[in-house]
Image (tube, rainbow, N blue to C red):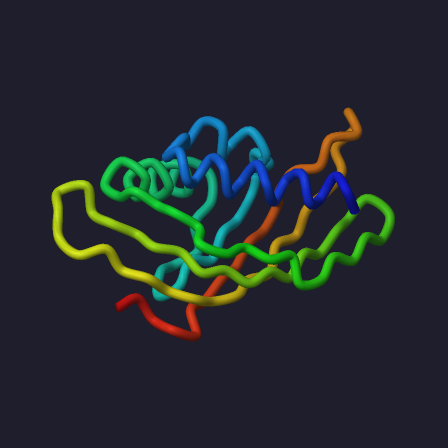
Length: 127
């Protein structure tokens, strides 16, 4: 489970820095993400989605908690909760949201864990 928590820390730090390349270092090539109110994203569409988001916004995770981690063989499920503040780089008031998500990870042949699927939602919409 330590490895999964390390992935979580890596994701949070990459998002806070706006570092899309670091973010994708822990995402598998065939990953599928399910952002709120959007169609599923994978492959180049996922990279474009994340690149565009981080190019246009600054992100700060005020809270990110691994609520539950279950590892079975080479698969792991991570239920998390978060609170983040997002600000448009063009200006305007920052917005804060709280929510939760599910992340599925798979251990690679190298032994490294990578994200294969992720879905999140907000139970307190951005203000």
